[in-house]
Amino acid sequence: MIQPRSQNSITYTQVIHLSHVIDIDIPQWSGDPIVEFETVAELNNDGYYLRRFSLGEHSATHINAPNSFHSFAVGIDQYPAQSLVVPAVVINICQATAVNPDYALTIADVLAWEEEYGEVYPGRVVLLNTGWQKKWLDKSAFLNHDAQGIPHFPGFGSDATQFLLNERQIAGVGIDTHGVDPGQDNSFAINRLVLEQPRIVLENLTNLDQLPAKGTTLAIAPLRLRGGSGSPVGVLAFIP
Image (cartoon, rainbow, N blue to C red; front, side):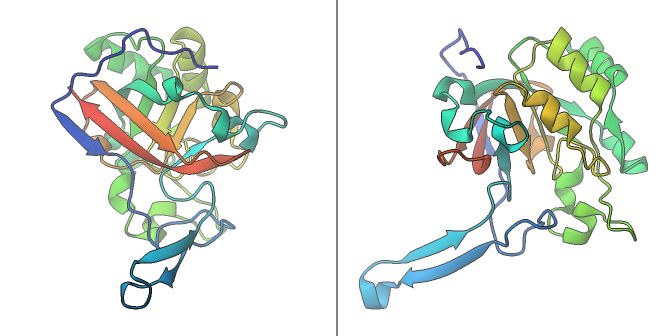
């Protein structure tokens, strides 16, 4: 399990939503359940307004749990509360992804970031700003399928992820695309690697361009779905 932070206070000047608004027309992974809303009570008839909603555990901005990729691993309901309040760093690869939509984070990218901002300390969640959040309202551009139906969007590279896990002991990863794995990788290798332990994997984040490179604290609030493979999630960023 992720160890709790020793620091127990957050100093901030601003709070930013890192979660997209959930709606019926959001980009969806092929085969995922559609998002549905149904009104079940109305003010005029019932004295209150209430809807029923339905969506997949990995829809919208969401967190993945280890049991989504590893048999007999923990579900999202078993994450301790203290593991969901974590410091974060942001690595910006927008320049590279503008040229190559299949770009994957490299060790060289991490070392270049550290040269400017200092070493990535243990217990951080590494957020990857690819610029993809700007494509969210265009499902075709966001998933970027080719003629064979293969999606093309950036993600974390295997070597860089191994380095961050083994040499920097990070608490997890997050990204503004539909997956921490590059779109072409249908083996979900990065998810499998990170979630060998109950770490953080956040996908479909937004507003990463509003965060500083370091100093942000995340408050991550999944639905505690029993045995859940993941959950739509509210993520707040506390900016120092």
